[in-house]
Length: 289
Image (cartoon, rainbow, N blue to C red; front, side):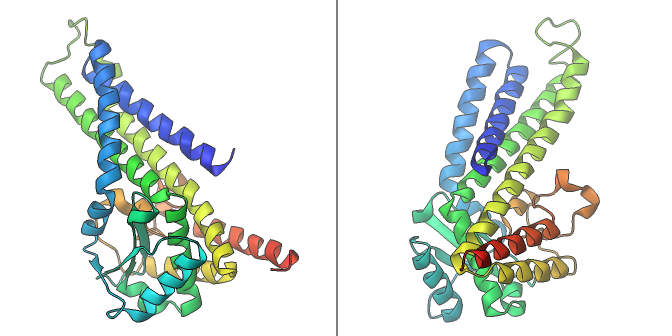
């Protein structure tokens, strides 16, 4: 199954989960209708507001060509090479070395890098990171991730509503509409957990595609592989504080998450990403790139 099909299937699963839990909160056809409306509303909200929310969460500030000429020219050069409109450029005031892209489409996109990443990466490695983020924009991953995060958040909120209705007597064993209380308790616990797992799986799927796109854009897969290794080693030292819901936007986990296992990681293991990039390098050399 291609990454695009995997992403579509995972987003469909998220939307289905949202509709199902709405049906439990508000029984009958009304619950299904409200679930559909809620799914559409959250997607619409994510469409228009995702960039502002993400940039605000990290206190990113927009920079002009005069304020950051080297960074701006690098983004501009790679955008032209990728046949993309020039995105807005932001710098995040953090010593954590990281980067992300956001925006509902290539015409309304932004690329943000931290002060830390500008300090530690040499130019060719930073180019690999910028190319990775531009590939996210070209693939419209920024919108996909925003929609996934918003739906997952709505599911968590509905789970809370369901738990309140259970604890305060809205659904009882004697209420024919209430269903099995044990089933409701399981839903309250498992639905938000499942939503989080699906959201993170979407993020992991898109990272491999963005890595490959960046390697082709720069013609230098090894530079991005080296950048990922460098970022991995520094991520454990300086945390990047923000809402955890935005973790999938970053190029690498802002904190080491090995103890959580791959299921609860927003990114594939760095070792796997590096191996894929080095394999791509061999393929490009074999083809004479």
